Image (cartoon, rainbow, N blue to C red):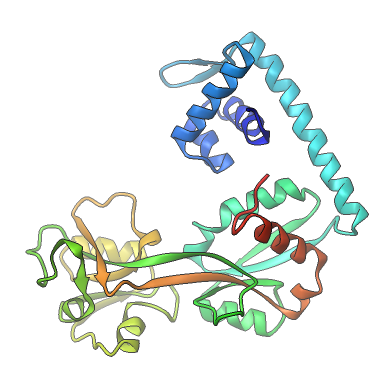
Length: 296
């Protein structure tokens, strides 16, 4: 059965001439996008695309289908602008504060889908540390802020969570006795340590101290998670980093869960001006209806 996501994907593939880039644009996996295109072409009864080695072309019939899809999506956008105007939401502007690891992982799909649902509204992302986000919320200079580990009931919506993992040199002998199930915090604390903060108060050192452990040998301190992983690869020590911040290329690294498991939770917190903002409430309502993701 064809839905709006199929048509958006169709247009995205035609624009990018590449399925993987189109999948990223529409928030799908490459395999999911390939399956969706196959289903759509099966429903239509003819191929829309021509698969070449490094390029995706469009068939003659496909060009006509894509043109109709563009018109349909444009008209849908116009209807949504009209609906927002009727509720006084057109031209609404939301300032959303976040920190880097969330900005690059959890927010892109959220913002992309919100703009599709409300094309007349604008979301401006301000990036800072977790402390700066809290300061901006307290000063009421932003409508929304992504807060790490919010107190129960404080967040309007929980966006997701992220596990902390141990990163060690692959070439080093196995550290500790915990085996394949993971490594204990005590075993980590006893090693030469590469401390990465990610620009946040909640980091490997603060986590360890909160749980009663002491880092006995901090060799180097860096802000960037990827830099820490590169230093670990060079044998400078071990690191404790969020799983979402791991580099795509992990050659030379050994990544293990920690015992007991540790997670970061991310929630959207409203400032007073955000509670009074129709645009902000529209964003939050979309998230609640989608159980953590804006869909449509």
